Image (cartoon, rainbow, N blue to C red; front, side, top):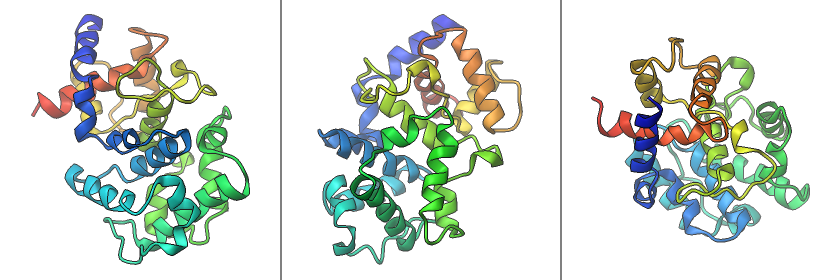
Length: 240
């Protein structure tokens, strides 16, 4: 199984992976702040039909660079920006809070996620600074850890930021070790993992994330989430 998964990682963790994945947006930028902000926003929008959310992200990042977008968010015409559950008010609120994080609090997403309880700390920051905390779109973007969510999009974002020596992931954060990362669990990864008896739990929740990550550590303790490429790639491209 390890040999199979390692071969699949080599097959799918290539530069060609980038062009059809939401990680292509942070790859457009060079500055650390632009990379992590665009990656964070891209990960939050990465649900539904891939061609649709990539189209919306193309639209959003056409306004300005990520830092310019959060610095001057009021001057951009975002009133008609809608993607499924996420309305313009949700996007504007997200940009306003990121503005507070970077400009007012003089902090960063890396610092926000660097604590041991990073899921609670980060989620609490956005909810505590939000003016519309019960909005459907905002709640969808920021699933609460206490609800046993798989937190797929946040774990994907952290993979992008933390994993080093990858042609796909950036590895620009040093505050989190890559062996502390958790597998981004979506329907494709979960289905293939159960097919190969890597995951026994039936629900796609946080307990399954822990179970699968621990299983993958048996194959590579230092970098278990590299197998996201193998499981996701196999699920999307080869298994119907």
